[in-house]
Image (cartoon, rainbow, N blue to C red; front, side, top):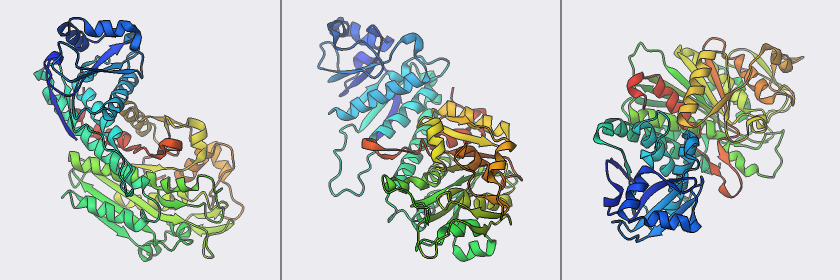
Length: 501
């Protein structure tokens, strides 16, 4: 989509659609007031007729209003003005995007980016607007013989109050585009079926991404190389599949050679049947989404490369399938991880932590500044936090707070859960150093406790995205989370020049 920025007056726009905000009790925003004045009070008269009150989620499309230069005016409800927050602004943008994309307008000028949201300036507001319109435009129809009806909208202009805000607005546009593209890539990888998106396919997509950036190098370790490294935990999961496992390493060098890297680890189970501890058949198709941690990390790396961030960032993606087979791991098997710790596999459906633990040990070689793993790890996290927040656990409070701040800044939020030593008791095994499950209680926490045993040599955080990585039902599909959170965290590590007012 063609997205641009300009300073403009609403009544002078000769576009297919002008987008304006209305607060509750039919209170026009400042831009809407200017349009209303040019239209001799027509907007006020229409609103008084009762078609719209300005509540959040409402929209009203008007055609050929006398006094306006545009074909359509889209009025969007913003809710109560005194309660107009960041989340309310995002909801307003989503409502506007959906209405625009359903309309026949080929171009639009949106004045919603001039609404006041606390201390946020044009850069932040433009970024949010770009991410939301691009998210709304996404269609998962690449494998359909007949494509979904494409929206007519091809061009949109977001406005700013004046030229002095142009520089920060352009920065917001660039960041918004990069995150939107990374999120779309993550969604596309997540939505692909397991017969296409295999570990080999993931490695190929990472390699394809590297060809677009001179700062990004990719290599993929195969089974023999992982055997040499002693990755017995990861390889135990892959035993039941005919697809060869991969350990994908994406190395972005945007900082100095001496700078310690930030390492992102993404769970890449391209299909999870549960193995011998097989899952119920209902909704098992959604287990193609079990590689959304990997997809999110790849999407974040795409955003980093596009923005050319002055950081060293490494992505490690352990990838395989988890299937039942005569060679598959059995409950009660004991495997030896790369760290040398032995693991009793009490449930083969707790496989994500088995591939992640070897990837975490592998991360030690980079002497990382911090390691963040991302995984659709536990159903318990869905029960605890629903679809609104990722679960966050960490062995370093400063790292945890940085990720929480990034989540709040981006709207891709997380919630910290405890990682107390008391929970480690649940992972005791009579026959090995550790069991791979800790019982029904505190499942998200005990999963993170397991990973913490392989993360003692560096600052580490774990994001359980099981509740936020995809939606079910009629809107089934990957969400692209947590690309925005991860990218915001990395932006925050780059200094004030990368912060949007």
